Length: 134
Image 1: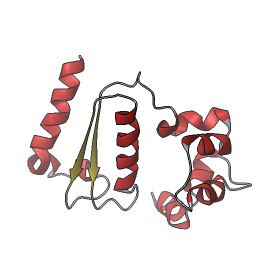
Image 2 (image 1 turned 90 degrees about the vertical axis):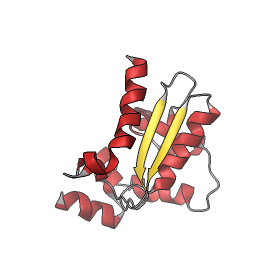
Image 3 (image 1 turned 180 degrees about the vertical axis):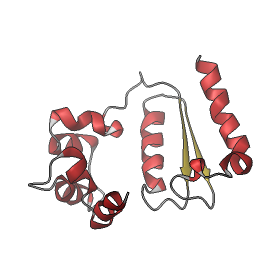
Image 4 (image 1 turned 135 degrees about the vertical axis):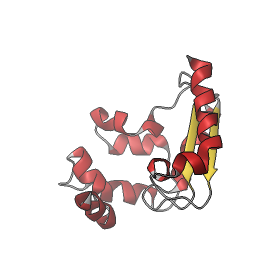
């Protein structure tokens, strides 16, 4: 875990996750998104085709299954804006999606020892969505 946090803090986790560290894929993607004006096509073009599957937001279409997303609002690893983004893309594609923002929680809140007691009703919503699909 220490290596993950080191790479995350340096902003180069994707470089080592994908093997694209020379040149840095992280730097390339940051340059594309820095002004906030970009499309998924811009991102697809920046990545080798065999890496597209690592980025779910690049393959959203109407064939996605119904989706429920839980995200801790205080997440300092994956910003909650990422869940807003994928949720918006899914809605635009006509996919039923629910985004549940869990207040006062960080990344990994769902694996803490008291998670079931604290967030049982939220987890029950996830269970109900899964049961509907089985």
